Image 1 (cartoon, rainbow, N blue to C red):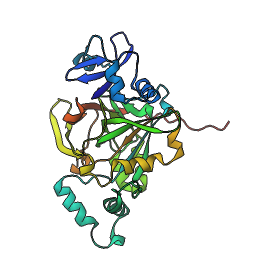
Image 2: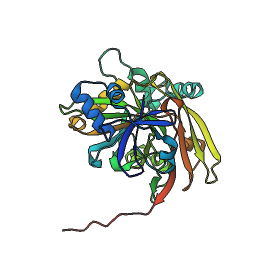
Image 3: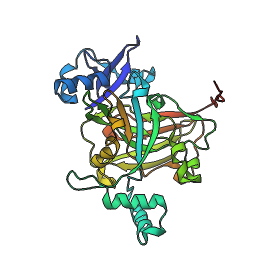
Image 4: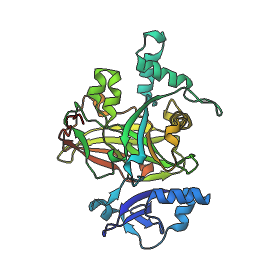
Length: 330
């Protein structure tokens, strides 16, 4: 099942089931968050409640997209109650990438960079058996709900940034129940978007490089993540032509960590189990145009597509002026 959030031509919010090019509205709920909270309270699955509540005249996806009425598949009315976070060094990549990576991490551990040490730790201990936690992944904070961009909206790069590049990923979407229990609603395509030039200067700049917008959606895939996810990441020039493209893979078959292990090492912190909060958590990638020496310019478009997730995620890159205000003593 695929769910999307959108607004009607009159501006009213809706959540609906996406089937092909048609969206069936879910009656009685105006958002994915409302639907999820009701499912938790009633002891129903998200899919079951959505199915039982769907009805009425279908909306055309084409019109929703063309008129800019699509929303991110999960949000919170107070953006400060939506955490956007992620984990890195979690993906094995293509067969060639895997072979090269295994050669890099072989041999003397002390001769490896810190990043390669962490990747090796994931390969060796990121998929524990049973309920025992595995090794911790790299973890980062991106921002709150205000940084999330729906498909069709611009991803904004601050003018002090040294780079703005895509990272095609799968994101887990979560709601925290009233008793502090994390609930996973499903998964969505994501463009985790980072400043790779800043990060390359020194890995300790990772935190700075991640404080950026991100793209999420268009749809929420309800249920479990397939073991193998395949898709294509593209950069479209200002003329709409493909300037760069490469396949990407995700899913546990292509990862050095299980989803459960990544979730454990995020939600083990009490800070992230505050009742009512929303979480969007990126699971990492092994594919990015920056690795091929591509620099994306303002006006060009990121496109991330995987048939399992419905329509492609598209965001145009924009540059925003510096908004820094010098701190004053009070």
